[in-house]
Image (cartoon, rainbow over the protein chains, first blue to last red):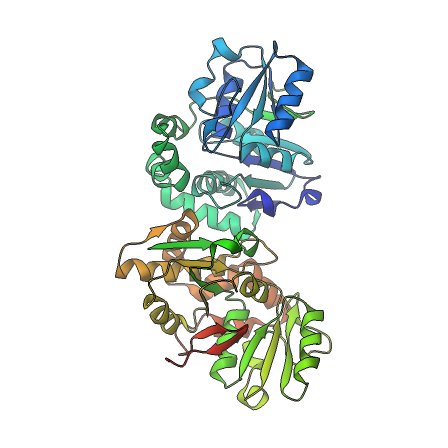
Length: 241
Length: 241
């Protein structure tokens, strides 16, 4: 089996994904927030590629049952209900709601990967559950790191390396260069995930914006048991069926 | 001062380069071959973005004084004089000739970086000379890794990390995430450059094509003293003036 890791969504060759399982990672913060939102009982999350697309969709679904969520430059989009901090996605706000989710990097990566045989969203907080789910598949795996504005982001690479490291403990895999590199980076940072987030370019930016506590929640390994899977354009919690 | 490292040419924002020094790296094999070609006395090297562009240019310059050089998928382009192996660039073939150089990754990266304040081509073989040249400049630095077909290539990242490591010994620099990552990768592989090349995706491909000996020459640290600089669209050997 092959594991191909891709550092930025722009490098994804969509036509090559159709027989593969895709894992999308956006540690800061979309994939962490998605895990929290599903854990806290939202009905599903529709990734939107643009602000306009998100607004249009919310009108179709109806603003009673759908919430507009997302950020630009880390800050909640004007007129939207929620931003991209996991702390905002409390059960009382989101239970049984459909979330339309327009973040800068994570939503784009999910849309890019949506032609895959199946698509999972992973992060540090739900690593073990998502890894267990992935390791039950015999498809080749593509790990798409969301990066930041189509540039390499170290936190996504390190999280991707955690998955690669765990797969290699279970068997033999063909890795591309980026998967090898991510593995090395994970090995270097595995005992200091929070420090790594604090030093990362995106982490420093979020600290400037006042979101330092988000870094703590994003660095908590296996704090949630939830497997976000894409089902007909909507991320839902895998229920084992 | 800032050091920004970029893993693939597609990520380069050309408009941001004009006040910066650019270092282009394509260890396997363009930047190694360029170092050998200049060391062995060619007059200059014109990077071409396409095969057609290269042929057209050779007609303008005249086939007596210009050689057509380059590869596609690692193999010499049909009708061209030389491929992309450093071994082909012997003094007797290239002395005082202008080389028109159309490689898949390195030429593209050089053309992408050509709006920079100045552009240098570096590799393991001429690391020290190029580093000494770069460290005499006070401009911000952008390191463009050529990668392979716009995908991450570990050998270019590790070589980029060698430059980053050496800069950090001289002073303080602001690094982007990719520069940090390259530094970590260099630290992991610095005692095994040849092994790293042999394990890399591109290295394995070159071995399959019969170019294993090229990997040995590409891994030889500081075997040459030559600084390839871009001067009016042509790479020439910096002569200190």
